[in-house]
Image: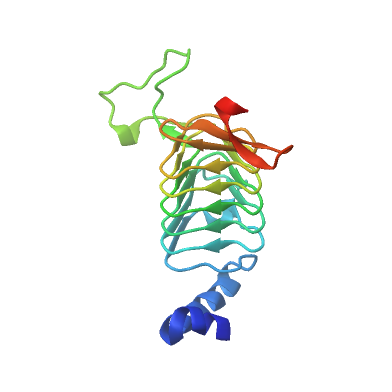
Length: 202
C-alpha cells in the first residue's frame, strides 16, 4: 500500500484501493480494473489471471451466444479507452500489452469484397447493413501501440509489435514489427544476432 501512496498520492491512492476492492468482487481473476469500464455481454467474455485495464475501456460481446466471444489470456494489460467488439471471436494471448485508444473488431457493417456478389448497397443505412464477421487472434507477448486499429480476420503472431497509429488489415508474422496504414512489416527479429533487422537487410 505504501508503494501506491508514493506513486499516486493519498486521494488517488484511496481511489485505487476502492477500485482494487471492486475488482476483487466483480472481476475475480483480474488484477485491477480501473473504472469506469463499459461491458456488454459479460457472460461471453473470459478474463485471464492478472487482467488489468486503464479507464474508459469498452468491451462488447454482441453475438448473443452462450460461448466465449472475447477471451483474454494471463497478464493482459489494456490501457485507457481501448475498445474491443466481437460478434464471433476475438482471442488475445498471454502477456499482451495494449496501449490507449486501440480498436479491435471481428466484424463489419456490410459486405464490400469477395466473390459472392452480395455487396451492400450505399442506399442501405450503414447501421442496418448485414454484420459480417471474421475472428481475430492475437498471440502471446504482443505489444500494440497507441491508436492502432485491428480489423476482422487478422492473426497476429507471438512476439509481434504493432507501431502506433497502424491499421492492421492482414496477418502479422511472429516476431515482426509492423507499422503504417495499411500496416506493413518493417523489421524482423533475427535470433542469430538477437537484433531487430530491417526487412530489406535481412
